[in-house]
Image (cartoon, rainbow over all chains, first blue to last red):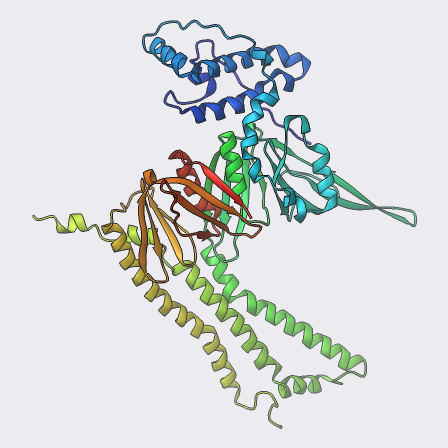
Length: 359
Length: 149
């Protein structure tokens, strides 16, 4: 299980805006998201004993910055002092007494999107791994879950991958997966099951990249970028609207990218059905030949076999079947890659303003 | 040699049938796409004349009947089955982005105006496109309403 915590250094002379990592024109909502994110990362309760002192100092500066900037009157005074290059003096009390639960209190506003049945699509084994790992005292709740066809990138496991899921909560992204392997001792074969669960703390994510590959047989990847490098998963679901909502909650940047594969999909339309058809036909041919030559099957020698194929026009009908499938795919390919969307159409319009300008 | 039971015609007729089956859908698609693209172009001209500017931030979202075109502060909803602009609005007129939760693969959403009126429901399979709309709506400071069905 891996858990990533970003390192954070605060310059001595950093402004309160710099400490919170926001623009001086940031709205109250942006300040709140930035504070929630940093406070969860640097709250002393989340750190081991040896790091607690440093974390406490950083947390105090974060809390002090938020206390000033979230109060419009204090913010105005602070901005004025900043513009005049003056020192701004203040007293902030009891920063360390703010509990994690208080910091996360605003998250309750999103509870309408938590879904009790969202885990219905993943197995009981994965469900129990997730339920046992939820941080109840911080109010962690499941928001959505999507099945995974393969283990998250970079995860090494024994044997074969059995099942996995992306479980989105209001605090973390859990990536539970189960794998299995067999061991043989003498005449005894034993099957084993193992589980892994990389965990990404949402405030540590720099950005989430949604990559959609191809237009007909769409494949979607999610790249979670954090300081330890990206983790890529390929969820089966494409409706990821809850991910956008949770990203907004933590102020995580979302990027989306469509990657076309024109030639690959043309090959899928034209070449793949014929290849599959030929393989099926070859198997049929060999199968019928074997049955006919070595047993009392429908044909008894090669001449009979070719006669059988000719009599029932198997080649013709197979070719017609394949052509029908291929033709349909070709139609989908033309629609997918030649249809304008409205934005493209607008971009391709001639510039009427410059055309009408008199000389 | 007795004729084939299921294909009693010369071999080249089978080859012709194969070519016909392969390329007639392709031809149909080309003709339909050209007609569609011509209509889309006309709709594009109407949209441009209605004030949608062609910039870097221009994008369209929505499959099937209703398509939303977003450019800067302007939004338009076009009906691409009946080829007309349904609504033309600005971000300032909108109040909320309403997302409908379903357990299907597509995303359904609509915009709610300050007056309480709503745009048509739009449907998309593209999380990439919806992501852009979501990001822009967040930048414009519009809250998100999530409807769990």
